[in-house]
Image 1 (cartoon, rainbow, N blue to C red):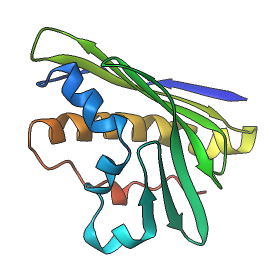
Image 2 (spheres, rainbow, N blue to C red; image 1 turned 30 degrees about the vertical axis):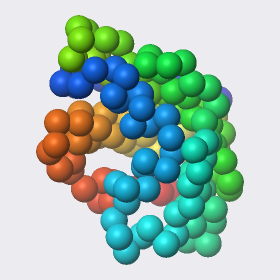
Image 3 (cartoon, rainbow, N blue to C red; image 1 turned 120 degrees about the vertical axis):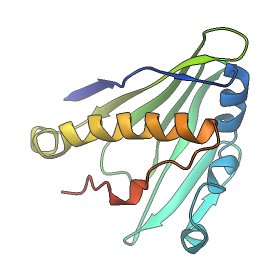
Length: 148
């Protein structure tokens, strides 16, 4: 059963091409990972993979639409298939409407346990990306747990 989440929309004080460029190469994401965790992560331009509790979980670029959208899909041993999309819509030359969409194939039990938490995670990631874009430190996402 597909769970479709359209996160909240925020305005990021950066042009859409800057946001797109930051996320279009998965190696850029490694810079945001705490130093003590970087040895568990590998990335190239199109994919990122992390070893978490003995599993290799990651995502790879499914599609890029320059300056407006990047879609990622599961890679490795993800617990469920998903499509994770970053949507950028220019507001003007220096501001961008931004939101995240997530489509996850969850069975009934998983939907019951983590469906609401996935929506909260999407909104928290959106806020974190908006803060990071203006040079503020996003809240620590490590305290957010979606495990069963």
